Length: 234
Image 1 (spheres, rainbow, N blue to C red):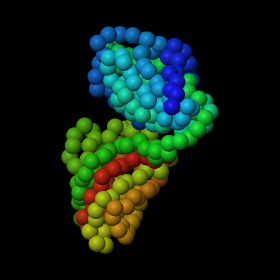
Image 2 (image 1 turned 90 degrees about the vertical axis):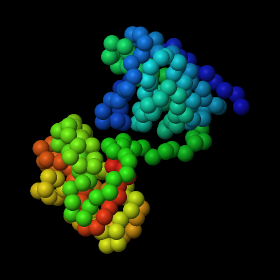
Image 3 (image 1 turned 60 degrees about the vertical axis):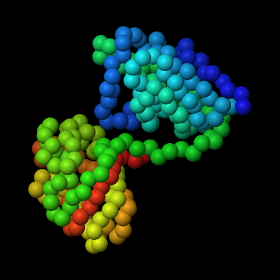
């Protein structure tokens, strides 16, 4: 099948919409450079919506289709729209600047299925419930519970979004309550968990975010519950 190497020379100024609530780079590059100096190769087969992206510039890259971001220097990126698309590559320079280069891509056939769009707040495996306080995102940069600290900006970002919680296991008759502090404000009251694994969804409000900033976000309830992921799904 004939392969087309996409042009790497053009730089565009379209707006980048980050999927992640917080930028996350873990490595610096060996030198400083501008966005148009990012060296990358994009390979597409016959207008397919799969583009193979390889970043040759030293450092940690973020490769994105504008809705999903992959932190890697190589990615099989699935484009989500027919016609004009843009591939975004972000990198962190040695002096701490975030630079970006954009590549136009045209899709003429949607051969590959679209993966779900998720922004993951936390992923792992944690067990709590039994009206305890273990399954909580703590206030400040201390880890008093099982789950990690969440900054105020993340709570603000979550406002108005339908958040999802994956539950992998639960005791028979278990219920889930989503609350704050010592049960001072309830966002969701005692959802019966009919069977696990399952997914619970709820809408995050501004009032809830404001309380979470001074207290904490807590998943509790009747019976033992094991959660594996807390995320936003488009």
